[in-house]
Image 1 (tube, rainbow, N blue to C red):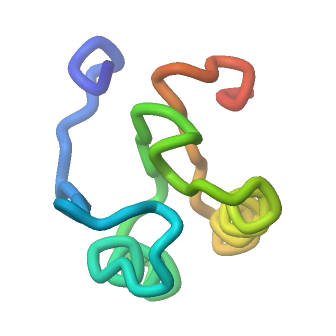
Image 2: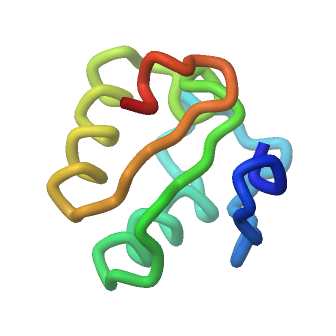
Length: 82
């Protein structure tokens, strides 16, 4: 999806063998820190169910990305990319 848009991926954030419901998600926490630091402006996720497991927290995290000026793009939920 990134290549199809002419984007190059600057960084991967992957929490291997960590549940989305886990309280501690090191890669996710690092991604949020990088977003707060302005290190990227677009976040590409495979799908929202991989971004988070709890609906309220996921919505809150997407809204936080928006507040930080980060555009969240989902490969599965194209309606989000508007």
